[in-house]
Image 1: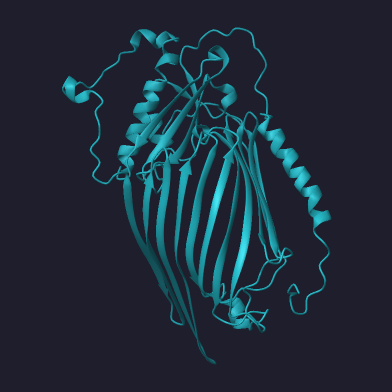
Image 2: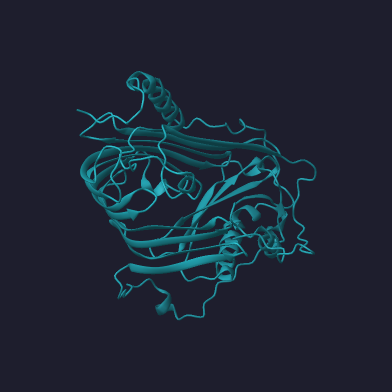
Length: 446
């Protein structure tokens, strides 16, 4: 007989209540995939090229003050509606641990239809100075075709560094003794002390990666520990927790739209009442758009199916101390970054195959849209329906365990949301850099 939560009330069948949600979600994905988005302005009359290029830099991680100091021959505007060129910069991590910066230049007004894309790659060991120097160098070169259509064209010159011999500058095979494997070791921790309380935490681990056009491999052991102590007149309270494990995956590229792979992990956590879990799950994924377009848009469907063996720290509410659990998951995700903003939508489902009423459903989304000049809105939220908490320990949790988060509690759902807007008006130009009394050197984050 299927297990029922002790003391719980019968739960109505979820098939009917979730079916409308699934229909609405799939309709939304189809609408987004069809390219629906805030439309650009319709065909406009011919506009004469400007005396100086107006650039809207759309980059949430760039050191914009440094860029404005280095590239002084353009006007920087605060809104894309006032720009001649919209520069959209996105980034992805490379297989060697570096970054690939994708530059998409979208011509507007007199430059409508004049679009250009390029990529700049930095190594894993690049300093912040090297990263921003490379970004500026790439942006300077990418803007040349637009500047050549302005009165500044007569003042443009191109300098090519030819210090290397011609033979050395030619493309050649790379002798990689690591065969594209990378290893990253990390460790950090923190501690705080007061007269009657103290706490400390640490985490450390290793990332071992190999990324090629055909393969994506990762092996990752990790270890997390936290400790808290509170001295009271009634006595001393101490709390410790651990979360350790080993995760791994192997993914094989089949085509521009298909991938297959497998995931395996070993996991232990005091909060989750898991002494040890072993899990193996083969997987397949389909991408509606080619993977090469992932930095700007992607719509993927991924399915996993496998089995896990779990040994619990304490006997569960279902009188289990260990068990074998077959399960499968389905995840659908849509993400797009365009000149008009960003949209991220995701839906996931997980279900145990031996007891189909044990499942979880989750939905999350975030939207950041530029409505008009100076006005943008953002809204996001998530909801998770939980019906698969097989790991809960038997017995009631005391107040100390709840407040110190030493024990997971039973729940039927998790939800959250965020929202906001920004509206800015006044001068559209933002060329001036004034770092006085900023307290941080006047630098934005890279």
